[in-house]
Every structure is written in structure tokens, then in C-alpha cells.
Length: 497
Length: 99
Image (tube, each protein chain N blue to C red):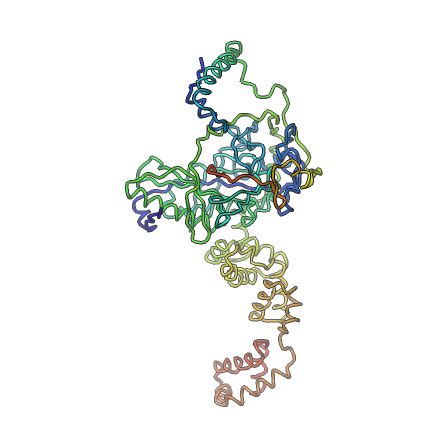
């Protein structure tokens, strides 16, 4: 069935969107939630498993204390209450990604509840109410064999790797987010971004969306403008980049409006997001919560964090990312406009790390936002995954400061870094990029340039300093950009004086 | 008195992937009702001051250190699998109910 998509402006004229976001954060504990298997990413299939996470008969789970600590710290950072007493629950379902035939989760007693997170979009602050943050375990990874495109439909059979099964997850659920209007896609993106920043600051997860250590499910519904009744929602699962979150919201708004505008009813279902064209497609009809037959997990005793422990953990919370943002902007002397670009690019943390290596803030900003962001966009990856580290940016800028290279050549060094050609020094050496520091070749190039353009030489002699650019340009061309422009200028003036 | 209807039993059987035909449903639904009634007699004994108990022992906060413990090798893990391929468990194709 082809979706009828209503242009975004028309959606906003007729409907109010309601957002809801569920974010799964994979913790970076050493071990899984309920057993001592390693929780690291990328091992050979089924090498990080034991009777407990394989759900073998008789195996008994024991809670990872570090994971509870991380859950409480996340809850506190989200301004949540921390439960004085809570239990785990079994969520029963049959699917081979969970060999136990249930997922150990929390149901009506989450460890953290009733919090909020403020996010800023285009100068406007939106308070996102957090309903709950609860502990659970990740599922195994299935790959579908046969069929045309490796997807589940049409597959002949599936293969399952349980390394991921049992890795600690924290699921953070918002209350319905209302009143965002045309900013809904941006608010959704800003919220996921803010959660990611918070998780990074807490140090509780690798926070790599591309590797699935942070995954977002995007709930969206539309209600006729002015109505106070929520519409039927769809849930787009596993949206795995910030840009995709924004696109998924935008697409679903247009799709819902198409259905509602034609007098139809939105189906309550899960949807799959498609990175290639930003669309979603139907997954399955959503089970009612009671179909999971939740009941308290009898093999795990309740968790009752003492208030002393909670306060101890509160004292370990990092500076609030939003407050930190304001402080860094002041420290670095970035204008609001510069800061907005830095923030939109997801570059602040990278700039901070680069500055920590001794680079001037404006230089760090220039490289990340003006140069590397473009490359990240071209490659379709997040800035942090562009292939250049803060340390390397600092090294490149140090070489610019030392006049070993100039800005223009620095760009070629970044090419080399992204291509994996070694350290900045090695790349300069290999590619022969160092600036010509010897005056001899420069003077020769200047002589050639002056001889080729005698009229320009006359102008400079006559005091027209604007004309000197033509000579410098010619020298740059002759030296393939590897001349220090300031030095060339000095030499030209000396020669003509 | 709690009562479980034939339709509810059919629904539960469906969720539990138990294929019951009409005769079996006719037979089992009343039996489940009898069991439910027997268990319900507990609520006649427990007063309002007795909360529903999921865990009989007064234990909380039993935690494990976050230290890796050796588990199974892939060979051991797959030893009992009806089918394996590419060091993974091979399962029949999955229809509907994608998680």
C-alpha cells in the first residue's frame, strides 16, 4: 500500500502532534545484567554466553550491582525519584531472540520515575517529562537467511547469536510530549541528543548510536488542532541516529495526516524505519501490555536502594550538560550563532577535548564545524565518527601554529587522516606537504611571478598594496600551496622596496 | 469469586502457543476455574494487613560484583542446539510478532 503523505506545513495547519520517546541505553558494565558473561560488543558469535543468559534449565540469575548503580545515576541525572523498593518482572513472549521465552524487565515498579529533562530548540526550551527509567536486559541478535533482502519477511530461517542477550539495558520512557507543533521533529532529535550527552557525561554507556548502544523508539500521534484527546499512535522502532529520529517524526506526521485527512484510522502498530529514504513501513500490530503476562521475577530478590546510597550516587553526578554548555560558551568566547552551529553539529564535546590538548577554542571550532562537519555529512556519519580524533585535530593545529603547514594544507592532512595514512607528521612527510621554509625557492618563484606580471609589479611599487595578492597567488600556485603567504608578502615587499 | 471464561482460556492458550481444539477447551476451561477457585480461598484467610507476597524471604539487594566469570565456549553453547549454522543457533523462520 502506498502511503499518502501530506506536506509538513499542511500537517501543522490541521493537527497537533504528540510525541513519546523510549530510549534504550546499553550499559558499559564489564558483565551482563544477570550473569558474569562479558558485555563487550563485537565478539565472535555465541562466545559470551553461559547457562543463565542462554536460559538453560536450572540456571539462576544474580543482579549486577554496578548496573543498578548506573541505573540510579541515570535516574538522578534525569531528575527522577528513586524507588525505595522495586522488583524485576518477567515479560513473557515467544521469540527466539530471548531463549528464556521471557525478558527480565521491570513492570509497575521502575527503579526511577517522575523526572524531566529540558531541551532547547531554536532558543525555545521544552521540558520533557520522564515517566520512568527501568532496568532490563538486551536480547540476542537474529539474522534472517534467504528471501530477497535479509529482512524477516520471506526469510527461510533465522540464525541467532546470544552474545548480546542479557547485556544491561536502561529504558527511559517519556510522558506524552505535547505542544511542540512544527518543532516536533527537532524536539525529538534534541531530546535524544540531550540523553546521549547525559549518558556520555555519566560515563555509563559507550553511547554509540551506530553500534546500537543507544536506540530510540519514536511514538507519534496526531490530534485535530485544538483537540485535547490524543490520537492513535504508531511506534517506530530502533531509530539509530539523531538525524533519523528527526526524519522518522517528520515522516510519521505526514503519513498520519494522510490517513486522518482521508477519514481513516491510524493503526496502533510498530513501524520499521528505513535509512535510505527516511520512510517507515508496517511492523506488527502492538500487543496490549497484558498479553505479556508480566509477573514478579521469583528468582531475583527486590532492589531497595538505601537513601544513603542514593545520596552518595547523587554526589557523583557530573555537571549538567546544559549548564556546562553555557559555561563553555563563556569560556571559549563563542557567539550565540557560533555556539548554535557547534551544538547542532554535535561538536562541543569534541571541541572541549581538542581545547584540552592545548588548541585555541576558535581554531578547534573552525576545524570541527567548518571542515570536518562537511566531511561527516558527505560520508553520512556523525561528526564523532568522521575518522579524526580531537588529539589529531590538536596536532594538526599545532603544526599550523608552528608554520610547518598552513590551513589549506591542513585540509589535505585531514584527507590523509580519514584515509588512515598515519599520524599528521607521517602524512606531511609521505605526501610532501611541508611548507617551503627556505627563502630560495620562494624568491625564485617571486621573480618569475614579477617577470610574468610587470604591470602588477609597477602597481605595487606605486603603493597599490591590493595588487600584491596577484603575486602571492602566483607564488602559491607555483609552490602548490606550500608557501607561507605572510613570508611571501614580506619577500615581495623587500624585493620591490 | 474469580472466574475465567472459555474465551480467556483460549486467548491464554494462544499466547502460550498451546494448540487447543474446541473439545479440549470445553474440557480444560472449567478445570482451570476449579483451580482458580481453590487458590482464591487464600484471600479469605489473608487479612487486609497481609500484602500479596512475591518473595517469601525478607531479602533485598543481592548483588553480584561486576567481574567477568568464564562461561561456555561456542561449541558447548551450541552442543544442545537442534540446528546450528555459522556458529549461531538456527531457528525456523519467524512469522509475525516481530519484536
